[in-house]
Length: 532
Image 1: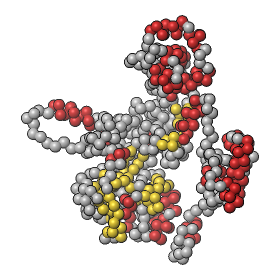
Image 2 (image 1 turned 90 degrees about the vertical axis):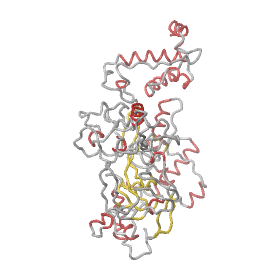
Image 3 (image 1 turned 120 degrees about the horizontal axis):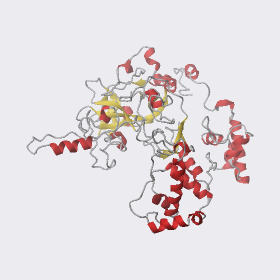
Image 4 (image 1 turned 60 degrees about the horizontal axis):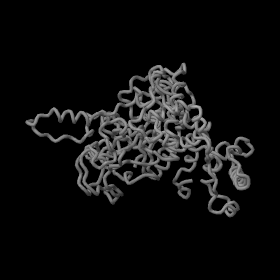
């Protein structure tokens, strides 16, 4: 209970905002059940090496050991609890229980599936055990009807990869004459591994696959040709577009249906949920969440890169090169603006940062000489700032000059749902400070306990504020950037306009502690806050 020794804090009202105490596991599972299950798991592992998934399948324990899509398992829960004294003394410091069962080492498909389950491929993460995009689960698609284009051709190599390359005519002649004998050099599991690679990596050449799997190149090509002929003959193969070889299953709830049209300018106030359906993303695809929410498809959707709903990116670099070629030597010189820095860039105009997979302005994203200026959040191009004493408590000050429109810093914090934000309102009111920004229709950013120096930026009316806030779409994720409204010198204190709703003192306005953003170029995200 926060502020337990402060009688002015409304403890009863705070308790009414919750359904249970944090030490009470949901579903009626007691703490004793968790520790009994974990101790049983420890003994089964040490004495008999029993697989935890097999134990859960029996249902003999009071709670599952491994986590599921609906609830955390007893192993994870125990790692976030204080151990009873008698168990802590018995187990010592480390308890080597792993929540994820190891994949079968003899099957490539199980190892790939394990990697898909643990690794987040979102461009903002690209790491394992992601807690932000954990609503996305990926399953290998075993449906042979959706392997490739009807006119799909096997990729070819430019040069032979070695003496056993399929490009060498004498090798292929020998292979064709002795195909039956050669086939016996691979086991059934090897063949299944090859088929899996043909499915999940159709753009790879036989040379690349042979080097990856340590097989002979001509043998790989022979299997691939036969596999290709078999899949082309399938009656369902002539689909309108290629579909991905991995089927996504998203655990999040279905969004509310909206009347969707072409996603030319999607609303930045909507949280993005990747689509995961078969077939193209078009009006007839009612299962397409992107179409229903009128947003662009992103790279984490289950459609291909040539999907018509994907944002096309920009061609600012090519257009500038063409304009420079047409310029006459007699033309007067005018300084060119930074690439992708104004509304002429379709990405910037749509409130999106440029995407290295879509835009031609990002040949080398992480080069210091990269010309594109619409990748500040992606590249973490903020300025050096520090917290210091201000006219109103703490404030944030520049440690280096900043130009107009440049990113100063990103506002970061804990991603919370609206219900969580409302629960924390009593804390914000009692504390007299609110650090919550409305991010979109699903999430808020709460920097009260987890954040950076940006939460100390003070308020100033819009005409006097020297910074503005923008919500930018970065690879499908919304992120809050604080940008300079004008040229600022080192040592200047940063200020932003919190918005009119922040200072409303009536009871209705106190129902949410979210500051109101004042982004430029698109619709403001409305929020409410307590009076500070």
